Image 1 (cartoon, rainbow, N blue to C red):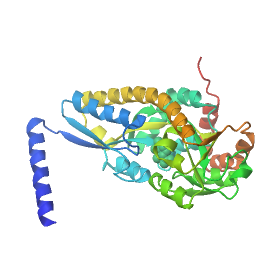
Image 2 (image 1 turned 180 degrees about the horizontal axis):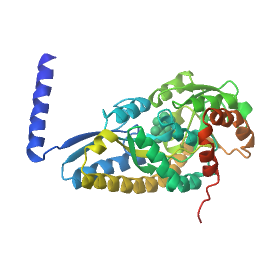
Image 3 (image 1 turned 120 degrees about the vertical axis):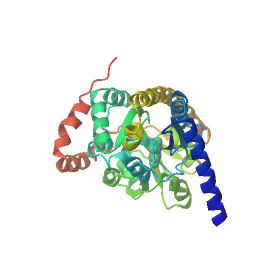
Length: 331
Ligand code: BDP
């Protein structure tokens, strides 16, 4: 143990010496990613890391760590905030716990569809969200797509809220999702993403909710054979940099990093569109029943207390909710 530690320290000191020898103030950036190899976000984030490394000519060496090996998402958000991690791809769902205005995006059925989400996030409102994140120590440089999230479970198709009665449904870390599922009639269970597969298998959970690519890549589809198209959440994701790391860059390198993030997002959105179709096909071929919900109104009506409670607690965010709802989709 002591020998290993010594060896590690020596190697690290050696590596640091080499790095320092080649570039003054060279930075090793660690990037958090929850997804596995080959997932659209992973491919795009790895491209980002490579572009940053190449274009800064080694002033920044960025490396992505996949499969949440650096910790759960809420932990990782905190680490990016305090500078322990340098960059990440985060979903804006768990982000709401850290940046209150971002919680607006977690109001169920907020958007009319993915197009409206893009219109909002790529416009002036999206810029306001990045400003709010930046005040909390997280620099958001570009938005990734994450499609729409729907319920899936091991028991039966979900046609109406009554079908959720008594089902234990995993949600991401955010009180709004607990209220969402509970008010629809289910039993919400917040849980780390990496624990869901085993919990579905052993019956600790009856279901969860996610988009097709994550439903597939997490292998949840092997256990949960009913996917019901509720599309209750459309959550954007970010390419985020720790403000500590960002502030340590020269303006010229900040521009390189920003440009790399924008290009990564373009790539991610392209890959995303393809992956959504491929994942849907794959789970269908594996025997998952995909259930179209003809009328989502009963689900939407159950969300009135979620909106009322949120707006009562955050009256200052009401105009923002209305502005988003009124955003027109071009074309
Ligand atoms: C995926 C998101 C990822 C979340 C995961 C989850 O891309 O950031 O952690 O869902 O449900 O769609 O936890």
